[in-house]
Image (tube, rainbow, N blue to C red):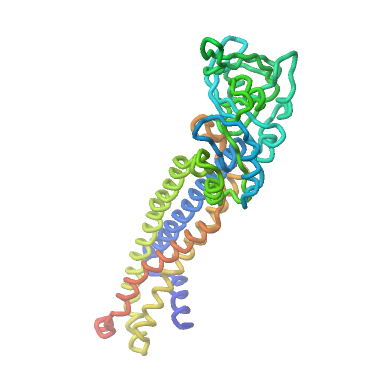
Length: 408
């Protein structure tokens, strides 16, 4: 094997008569390098999108959401105790979710999602405390000049010019039941906090109040609409969700965060696979250049091959020489792309690239390097480069030394 390795390195380092062949080899390295670099950067960005979206979704939502087919329900403390006993469950909290109308002091109105939370236990299930940038979550417990507190999203505040300490009105369309009929219910609130989840949709369309205030506004007495659950391993939330469905009565059903955001994460997964396939084509271009450069090297070194065969070199040895030469080109391109790709990822981390948050859900380009993906890209590039060396090397091994030396 030392003989083949020596010749392969010698052929790579030697100054060829036709400089054009060396140029093709450089282009081959550059092609493989560009493909590997692009794949690493794109896959890391896709992984970053998924990780960042998951983090932001989990700051507002729980791992598992439990609802009742009948809508709001009471006597939920027994259900909470039953869920706490299930393996994998870390914490639970009761909550309320409904649609309301928000009216600013300037008279502007918009629809919003009302989130009633239990102040004591909500922080154990969701990362709400860190999400609130101005004010505190505990401010929802108090009243201010007879007005209860409300926390709104920073985008909603910007859009309608609402500041901390301003008053807003919340109107529940279903309202309260009166002796005559059900009428909408409105109530004045004081803005005691602003939250920033990093996701434009949440920051624009969500308001938080305490469970007690949500019950009063919606007229549902001591009832809730959801039970939210935090599990030990978020990736196993579907398994814990199935266990919860088995443990609870038939009127309850559990949905984990992956199922609730299935369309979004399925689209990201499909896009990641598609980009992997498309960008692999760049590596294939580099592989085709490896084939062409090796074919030309074989033609240039026909006399050398004939002499080696006449001296007793086997067909396998000749084949190994050119396979190693092409493989070195592929490995050089792969290593160059690996270093460049990881370097660009680190650069993006240090110098964030801003994005329009109302389009991309997040406000900067995220990067998360998955070394399993990096290993897969590296392996794929080396395998493609190896496969590209087979035909030229086989052709070299089949050369007839008599024919090659006849006119020398």
